[in-house]
Length: 295
Ligand code: ADP
Ligand code: MG
Image 1 (tube, rainbow, N blue to C red):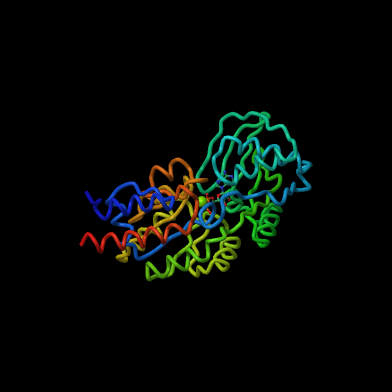
Image 2: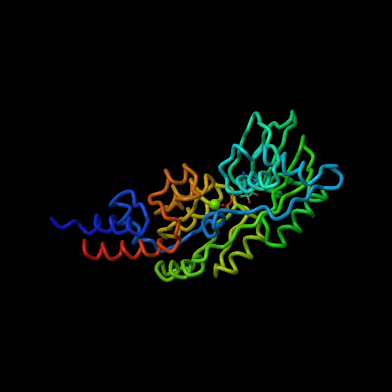
């Protein structure tokens, strides 16, 4: 027997390294007329590296001591930034101590007990909320103006330093954004929890004009709902735990598989297993072709 067009499109998508979870999803992919993309791990490779280790002078900590505390708190986290911090500590042969009471807040950061102290690592904007006059705020701003993602380290309530982290844009990001713009007929938007300075720099490089930065997971959902209310069928592409609610709210949600969190992979309608961003417009085009055969 010949396979129905949507099923053979699923098989074809599979050959391109994209797992499409059902025939319904295969059909819906071709309907999208708006695109919202996450930044870290989606447009970027998702293997960020620590570039700067900056203890505040008043903390009395050395670079290694700052990095060791941060790595301990980040160790249980599956966030790409957490992996960068742990790798940097291992790269300096630091012993990462065990932690207790680990907690993570998507879009914000982590906290844990290390050496009997409470260590928080995360977004300067969120953790310094209302304390913009602290020297840590100026330090974070300097790192961010250099295009870094700054993560603040706080010990027992006192900021002790910051880390600068940088991730490479995927080679195929700019071409994929252009293809998705052409296929959807609308300009893609960038939804990110990262800081506005780093977000604007990357958006500029990749050709996205509409940038929403500093977003919490529920803010990403609100952006998707706003488009949906305006009558759009939104494709959301993301990788993180922080993207899962937006992937669920989307007309179609696609997760990046390699560095993607389990929650994003489970929530998404389709998964880019082979980690090639450029397969997304390919699969949208496959859906359009199959739908023409079905109708
Ligand atoms: P994106 O939307 O770009 O994928 P996230 O929402 O995952 O980013 O994270 C947004 C911000 O929250 C990060 O830039 C960082 O400041 C902070 N953050 C989230 N998780 C962590 C973590 N595990 N360690 C440090 N910072 C974190
Ligand atoms: Mg992400």
